Length: 214
Image (cartoon, rainbow, N blue to C red):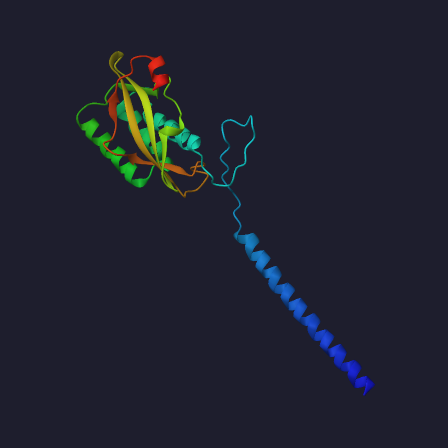
């Protein structure tokens, strides 16, 4: 009887160890899957002012980042340093990863229409923010967790074969969206989606002091 009791306890202990080993194997498999499925890259948007420190989360996009993205990409699209007939199309192609398909199509159609009417030949264009009208919180509106509306006030300067033909101030209401794309192509994870509302409109700027008070 003593032998049978000892043998039963040994058998029970061995079965317990088997269950523990099986559980550890399952846990290892789950950990291996989680490691394999874990993201190898994350986007961290660093605030422009770190004097007082900051707490950031992965993919947490602040208004300043959205504004900076919209301003930079839009300036690149409108930078024609030699001839708009070729530069405009090249800039659309170069910035393609930062544009939604619909906005790329809109710009391509705009390129075709302007080219057909002879508006781009020999045209050089540059745009820059209106003095005193850079980033402010009110210039970025959160539409939903993945969509923003950004207002850019830019000065457009154009010349045709060396002659000044345009210098105007324009307000561009641009829609920016989260864009899930290869980070090698688009490290921002954002894209311009098009013009909002009634689109761009001309504005009057009397002086920089007034712009700063607006």
